[in-house]
Length: 280
Ligand code: SF4
Image (cartoon, rainbow, N blue to C red; front, side, top):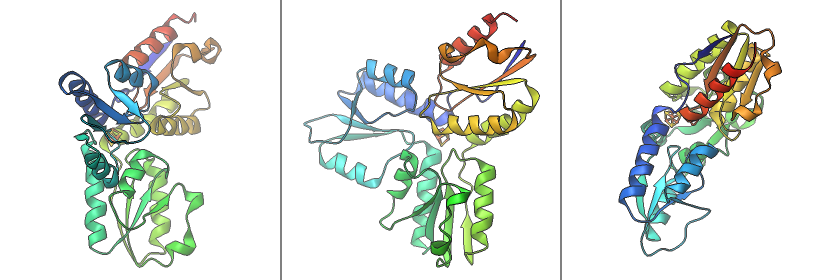
């Protein structure tokens, strides 16, 4: 059986950069804290913990120490509160997420109502919302567009969470355009996500089986899986070799492998090794 690995599998640029900052901070700075997981992957979270970085649930007053802001970014409130409570900020926000922050702040200043297409409970969306004093409107999917509220908006700026599915976003924007007279759309889906999505639209059609690797709490892995599954029913989402069933590959001549932006290369290697060991 041929195994085809997506070129974009494993860490995206933003996660790689954030991890470099994390491990450097672990060596050079004193106590470093993170608010929750900084990468949505259990293996990576374990490695971060081992390096001495402490995960906390909420901020409290400290004598000294640093707070690491993850690649998803954080609200302005977290930055100010943390500084007030004694933390030095180490900002590992992905530059592409920072760009979204910049857009929403500028457009809000110009009087546009901000609409974000994304998962309202995701840290990135919370971080975007937390750049502004005014409430933003979050649209999670095409079936949940609050049309009554949308119809009242005269000027809107629409951005997308960086890991959204481009096709779905464009469909939502097309609907919004019918109701908002002045609508500015910024395609803020990041380059690594777009490359991944291009591959995931092609690979399930070219391979008999698709294996999508990533943690169950990774939003972008979930999206890769959903696209893959819609194109090829023999798509499976796993995070370790243990979850793989040899029967999935029965009669398959090729298997395609893709992975979320927070999946470490070691996990991909272990899974590929395991698939290769399955008797044909
Ligand atoms: S998925 Fe995109 S925006 Fe998010 S951290 Fe990676 S490169 Fe940055």
